Length: 233
Image (cartoon, rainbow, N blue to C red; front, side):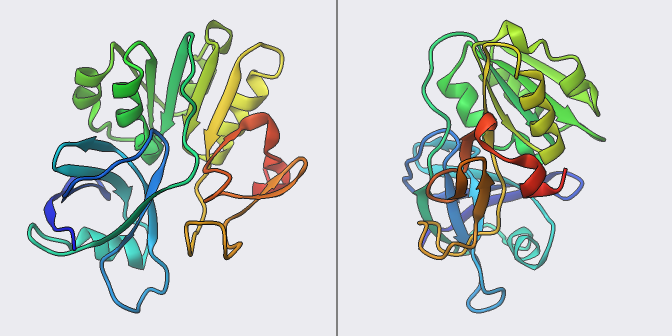
């Protein structure tokens, strides 16, 4: 079983977990993590923050029992990992913006390494974190605070936008892109049980019927998602 190298709180309730081992995965894909036997029932899906030889990293926010258990992990502790799962962000050409809000920045460090010419927008409501690390990975990093992340983004400058963060932020990006030629891809957060599409726990309301976040996503074209029905926005 993989073992923990480090588990560090990088900001209030935001943790960076590093696990030893050889792992694979694409930008926007996720792993199912488990550091307990029976309680809580479900493993926790976390997107890939970074992969390097001999290690994988996950950035997560402590929100409930499962993530509280993850935050207690110490170097040398064992942890269960399954993955990679899901359909991540596509490999596209052209001018691309990576837009992360809050802990939604998690998939974009690895994505920035794959897309070094992309502009990276990091949105924070309070204390910024890991900005210097992103600047070492990306050519251009733009930290933003609050609503300015969406308001200041000139969507028409980009061929595609990859987004992850609060649902209201992603819907606002989709609305701003409606009258441009910019494709917006959003990574949706859902409770998951199996990670492979068998249990239907992670159903997503789309305009042409329900889909599964773990198997069909977690990345979807924003214009396919019915944000109003899905999130009551």
